Amino acid sequence: MPLISDISKFRYKQRLKAIPANNKIKTALHFIIERWDDTSAFAADSFLKTEFNNNVKIFFYCHKEDNGNVLNILKALNKENVSFEIIFKAENYLLFEQALRNSISLTTYNIHGFCHAGAIFNTQWLENSIALGIKLSQENTSRKIGAFSSYNPNDYRLFDTLFQNEDYTVKSGFSFLTVFFYKAFLQKVATQIFNDSSSKRLMEIFKNYDFFAAFTNKSFIEGINNKSEITAENFYDKPNNLSFAQNPVASNWQATTEKINSLTYLKLHTLIIQINFGGLGDHLFYSHLPRIAKETGRYDKVYISNQSGFRQEAFKKLIWMSNPYVDGFTDLPGYIMTSLKYNPEINIMDQVMLLSNLDDGKRFHEPELYFKPIIKPELQGKIIFDPNYISNAGDKISKQNIENYFQKNNINIDYQMQLRDMSVSISNFTNWLHSDSLEDFMSIIVSCKEIYCFVTGTATLACALGKKAHVFYDKEFSRQFLHSKINTYVEL
Image (cartoon, rainbow, N blue to C red; front, side, top):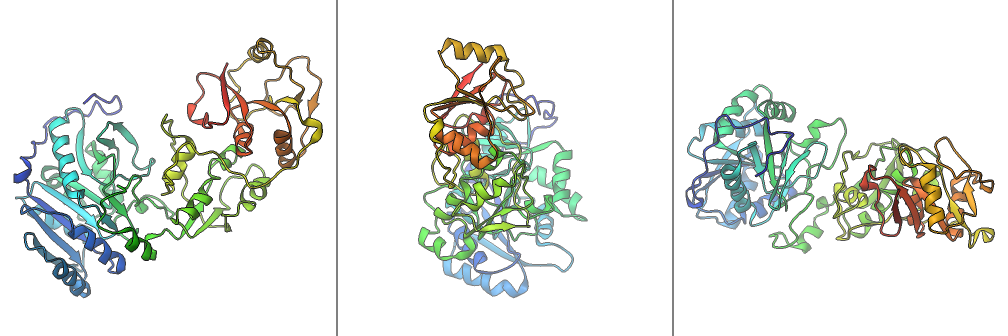
C-alpha cells in the first residue's frame, strides 16, 4: 500500500506476525451485555446466527440476574460446534475491563473481538473481520494497525480518515461497538488500562503507541442502541448518535425487515438538528433532513436546536417553521458536524444526511424550502447580479474578470443588488435593487429571468427555490460548496 504523508513516520520497528491461514485462526469473542432488554436479545440472536467455526470461543459478560436470559438464547439456537462461557460481572470492574482482563490470559487465541449487545450482525461479519485482519497483517508496511472491524463508524471528527482504498479505510480512532485486536497488540496495552478503563484512556494509549484502526468500507454490523459503558459518547459532553453504521449492508441480514420495524428501539426516536454556522447556506444544507427522517421512518420527531447559529431570525420562520416535517425547536443540543470533505461522488447535503444516520438511497440532494414567495411582476424578464458575498467566496475574483465575462457572453445586467460589507460590483452601474428582508429577496430570485452571484447563500437559496443561479468561483475555492445540479458554476 502507498505511504500516507500524515503517518509515514510511524513505520514498524517490529512488524506484527502474519496471522495463520484461516482454518488455523483461533478467535475469542467477548460479547458484553451491560443492560439486558429486548435489544440485547435481538442483538444476541443475530450474533449467534453467524456461522462460527470450531476455532471460535464466545465469552458472555453479563450480570448474574441476566444468566437465564443468556442461557435461553443459547438453548434456542443450539450452537453445538461453538464453545461458550458465561462470566458474571465482578464488583470492582466494568464489564469491558473484565473482558480485557480475561483476554490477556487467553494466550492461545490469535484474534480477540469485543462486541456489545447494541448491534445486529450480518452473518458474514466475523468472516469479514478476520479477512480484514489477515489482509492488514500481510500488506501493512507503513502503518501500525491496532484495531480492525467490519463495523464502519460514521463520525468524521472522532474517526478521521487517513487512507481509503476499495476494501477498507484506515482511521485515527476506533469504534467501541465492535472492535478486533491482534493478540500481540492486546497484550501490549491491556494491562495499562486496568486502573482506568474509560474510552478516553483507551484511546489515549492507542494514540500514544501511534497505532491506527481499519474498517471495511461496507458495514456488516448495524448499531441499534447506545447503552454501552464504553462508547464514543465518552468523548463528548453531549449525546450523539455515533454508534450507528454509515454503510450497513442492505441484504442478507438475519434480522428481517419485519422484525426490525416491529421493534421501536431500533428507531432513533428524535433527531435534533444543530447547525454550527449561522449562514443562510449553512441552514439550507440541513433542510432536506426532516423530510428524509420522517419518510424513511428512521426518526419519529425532528427538532431544530436553539443552540444553532442564526445569522438572521428569519431563518427560523422561512426555512424551519414552514417545513411540515419539523416538529418544533428545542434548547437541547444536536450533533454538530465538522470536517465535511469534498467527495466527487456525493455532495455536502449527502454527507450531512449520512452523518445523521439517514440514507434515502439518493445522491446529490438539493436544499428544500416550503415557503412560497410572491412574484414581483416588474422583475420578470430581468437579469440580476448579486455582487455580495460572505467568507472568502469573492476574495480572489476581480471586478475586471466579472465585467469581461458579461461582455464576452453578451449579458446585459438589468439590476445589481445593493452593496453590503463584502462585494465585487460592476463599475459605473447605477440601477440598484434593494431587498428589505429575506422574504423579499426570495421574491426577487423567483421573479427574475436570471441571477448571477458568488458561492454564497444566494446560490444555495436559488436552487432551493428551484431557480438556476449562475455562480462565479475561483479555482482555489473549496469544491464541496459547488453542490447543486441545478446551478451553473463558472470559474473566473
